[in-house]
Every structure is written in structure tokens, then in C-alpha cells.
Image (cartoon, rainbow, N blue to C red; front, side):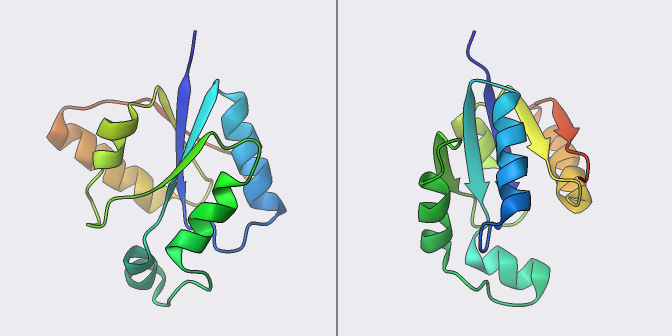
Length: 123
């Protein structure tokens, strides 16, 4: 049975922590889809422009063997159309994505969509 796992992140300069997180996510299913934060989101959330443009970050993720698909997230913060488009069986969140978890819970409650979520442990 195929199981699609969805993760979210900025991935601005992929490092060993990102690689571990992505491999862990892939181990939870048969297909890994990565939602890449838009540049505008990074500016609003982190207060600075990312080092690498969203298209460059997207291409870097697409090149990783554990990533089956990488796509840009919704442009409007708080929208999760990507969930409807991808149809994940599971969302794996990073240990530091508490705000995203809250936003997803709110969106799921309002939209009527439900996808199980788990948070990766900090290594």
C-alpha cells in the first residue's frame, strides 16, 4: 500500500539535520512530498529574505534521492491548498514547527480536512 508523507520547510541551504529529517519522513511512507516555503513567507515569518531564492531551494530538494516530489507551498500564509493537491496520508513536522502545527490544526478544523500529524524528535 502506498503511503504519501508531506513535510514543510524553508530548506535554505540543506544541511545534515534537513537530510536526517527528510530520510526519517521518507521512512514513514512510500512517497515523500516536500512543501517549500515561499520567499514571501520566509520574510514575514523569519524577518529576513532567504539566502536562496525559492526556485533554487526547490531544485536542491528535487535533487535529493529521498525526495519524490518538491513543490512550492501556498502563497497566502494560513492556506494549505497543498494538502488538498497532494492528498497526504501523514504530515511529519519538524521539532521546531509548533506554529505550523497550530496553523494546520486551525485550518483542518475550518476546512473539514483531516490528516494525521506527528512531530519529529530533536536529535
